[in-house]
Image 1: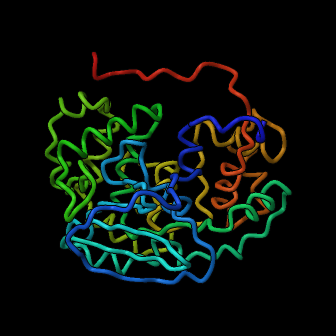
Image 2: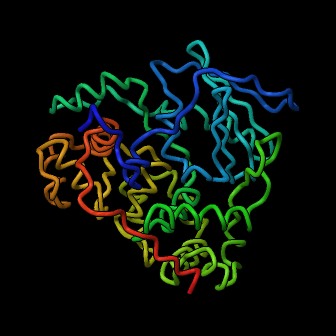
Amino acid sequence: MAGRFAPRPTRATVRGGESVVPANGVPRQAHAPGRVRVWVPDGPLELGLVLGPLRRGPGDPTFRTMPDGSVWRASRTPAGPGTLRVTARGGEVRGEAWGPGAQWLLEQLPRMLGADDDPSAFVPRHRLLAFTAHRRPGLRLTRTGLVLESLIPSILEQKVTTLEAYQAWRLLVRKYGEPAPGPAPGRMCVMPAARTWALIPSWEWHLAGVDDKRASTVLRAVRVATRLEEAAGMEPAAARERLEVVSGIGPWTSAETVQRSHGAPDAVTVGDLHLPGIVGFALAGDRDADDSAMLRLLEPYAGQRHRAARLVLLSGRVPGRRAPRMAPRGIERL
């Protein structure tokens, strides 16, 4: 299966996969210079693997990959909105940033690209994972240092199809966000501020396909946005505890958040529709594995279970589909 077909595009494979970044291509047009930082990683680095989990679908207004091999991100930092362009050439990474948050983004650049991550801590116990880790040595776990920008889209992804979640994020950010600073590619936006999320009318959530339960969870989260952003400086376990104090945020959502905000190597996602079956099939031939079976299979990787799950997803060894893909509910049409 792995050698004949590409993995089906479930939300799990999108999360665990990569964003395709061309190695070379058409040079970009000249643009106004921003702040610049050059950083040399201490090992192999693949931008698409490291930054891919930050992309919420092909139309994500906050994330863009370009033909020249660059990756663009628009973020709302503690210093304000900012745009970051990252390129990797000849063993070094160049970051260029614009906007009030430019300096903060450049200071965070090494952590975002996995400088705090230690891939050597992972010891493969399965041949498949050993082969995948050898084949993709540029995998590092990103650490953005920003909680809300990972938490809100994770809430939108609760118990819905990939298409519904990505559409909701795209529509709400484009309508209520602000244009990305600097010469960002067309239609890139910075996500709305916490107060703006709180002021979105109920009918706009409905038009974006977001049910009342998820919308209410986002509203509860943004009311305590400052306290949640403080969790970026905590250990992942403590950060998850703080996030889960908010009603509507459970283990699935907190894990999806700290995987990105903290680069947490052990924050394996439980409660996912597809992941247990994918891990079970890849490591034990059990496509019907549940969360408890998945966790048993990942026990040898304690401390590195999230990395192990990502390597499973990158391996391409996924079970074939037995039923048509779940259709979007389309509540915005009701």
